[in-house]
Each structure stands twice: as structure tokens, then as C-alpha cells.
Image 1 (cartoon, rainbow, N blue to C red):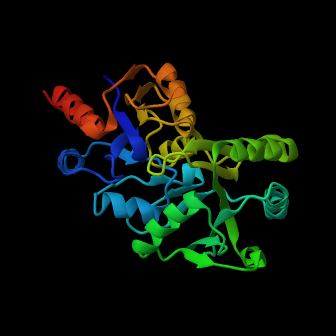
Image 2 (cartoon, one colour):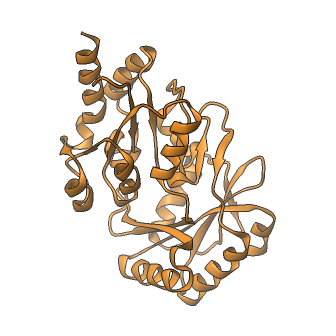
Length: 284
């Protein structure tokens, strides 16, 4: 390619292995590539806290996209460079719809200094899987509450409901009926707790594509070609923006159909292998 290339990868089901971590092989290849200055970063539904557990001290010089584009964040300092919070006037309306649908949920928020994840003591199996994993990891964001008014003092970045697919589809319809295009929502099955589906609810501008566009504009990468790697519906936004869109073999149908081409399964380190081989060709 004549123009320099920016590479952006999703994490779960794309760059990470079956256990949700960066494999030794992928880490070694990425460390070598980043040392050579390859423009690479990640865009994920995960928070920065969770990203760092998976990626460790990977020397990412570019900001990362967290919470599906709700934040563009400096990986090393945690400073939020771009934020998309849900309008405070809409927060109570979203909660009202959730309660009408008898849905239990998480609220992810920011108090100006720290991120928090609020939840009640009520859990279903999908939420319990997530919370147990987070508690075992010592996630400092977790807050148990019996009074949702606590979040009125903070900026809400995301509501997350976890349940069987049908209740989540019904909730998504109800929220669309109430708020239409004022929200961005992503629904998918949990890759690690099959049968449980996540519905993440964000500000209308919180999507990976818009976040990456802002990242490119603010980091002096406007003239770079964009190559992205993904596997799930929340990756469509960045694929629509990309000059080259690449899926992994385990990607959902929508992503495979939209991609320019499809690599092997994510657990074969196909993203880091692709990057390594392409860099070797460019360097020759």
C-alpha cells in the first residue's frame, strides 16, 4: 500500500484467545510490531480496566476505544480524550423502560475521576457469571446499590442488560419505541457464557466507527488507510468506515458478509499473524 495504514482490532472473538486473553504468540508478535512503530490500537465493548487485564503492559502508543466508542482513552494514563455520556434527562427514562420490562441491569458511569459499575443484589445466571469473574479479578469499579439515585451524581456511559435472547430483543424494541435514534444499542450472545445475551445501551454517538474517525482526526492519522478486524455486530460501525475490513472465521453472518475477506478462527492468532506478515512484506 502506498499510504500508511492504521490497524484497529476488536478484542473478544477477534484478537483474544478462547479464554479471553492475549496469547503468548500474539503478544510476542504485537510487541515486535509495536517496537517497530506500527500504527495499531484496539476498539472494544470492554472497559479500560478489563482491557488492561487482557493486554497487560502492551505498549500501545495510540488511544484505545472502550465501551463501543463511548470513550476514546489514553491506554497508559486512563485519561478520557473523548466521551459520549447518555443525556441525564434520558437516564431515568431508560430505567423506567427497564423496570417496565422487569429487567435487571448494570449501570456504567464516571464520577469525573473514576469509572464505576453499579448493580443491585439481584442477579441472573448471565450477570452472576460476569460479576463473579469481575469480583475475582478485584475490579475496583464494582458498586452494589439499593438506591439507583446514587447514579444521579455521575455521568452514565452505558446501561447493560443480560438475559436470555427474547427478553433482550423485547427490551431493545421497547427502547427504540421510546427513544428511537437517540440511543445506540448492541445485542449479542456472551462468548464465554453461552445462552446469555448482552444488550448494551449507549449515547447515539457512541459507536466504534465514530470513535475511530475522531481518533484519526485528533492523532494526525487523517490521511492513513484504515484496516479493521472484527467479529460481532458492534464492529459494523468501524467496518463501514474502513478502507479494508477483515473478519475472523468465527464472526457472525453480518460481519462475514460485509468483510472484504475472512481469516481463520480467532484462537489461531490470525490477527497478529496477518499484521506480522503484512509488515514483513512492506518492510522488504
